[in-house]
Image (cartoon, rainbow, N blue to C red; front, side):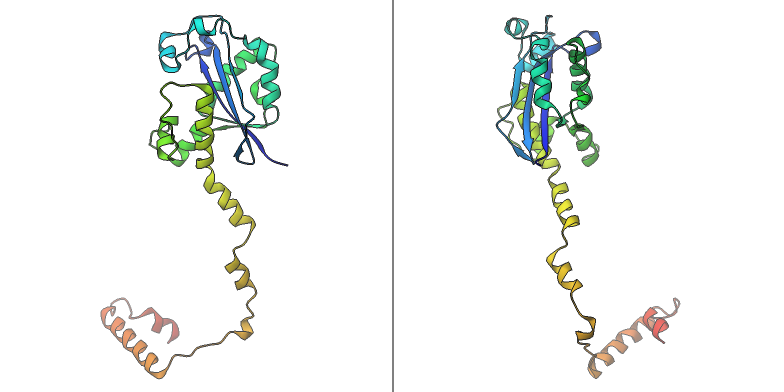
Length: 236
């Protein structure tokens, strides 16, 4: 069965869910067995409150634009049905999860984690892989050559698309590692089939043996205080 993952991003009225900030946009991209599908989920949400000026400068969304959009309760069931049972991939997951848990609770639904099999935080992954470096979405796009030239403002669906590409780049090495662990290389298989009795032993010629002794003599001279060559001590 194909593994299903949902890359998720949100935009909000501000930075603090506990002070009443709300979700105003949700964007999701579906991955099936690491391939992006055309089954996305995107909606704007009427937050029923003002949008902070600072937040609006980041994503460009205003109270006026959102005033005729559905409220979260109107799209909550469609949202949880879409992500049901999938792994969720989120950048700085704690932020989005706190906001979505609040919205789900207000709409009478369970926590986000109860609708998904696992939540993967790409920010935590990036910090582990690139300690001490900038690991914002823009920085990761630059590091992994993901084209984000069209990202002049934050947008949930666009950011989810970029994050999907970044996630696939972040985890590409894991895929090859699993293949190496599961399937031995052709060289390893061939080596396992060698019959030791059929191996040909090549003896050193008299000339090669003499040259070898000269090398050992030289080592003895330069390593007198250390007891001479290790080879002669082990084989003498």
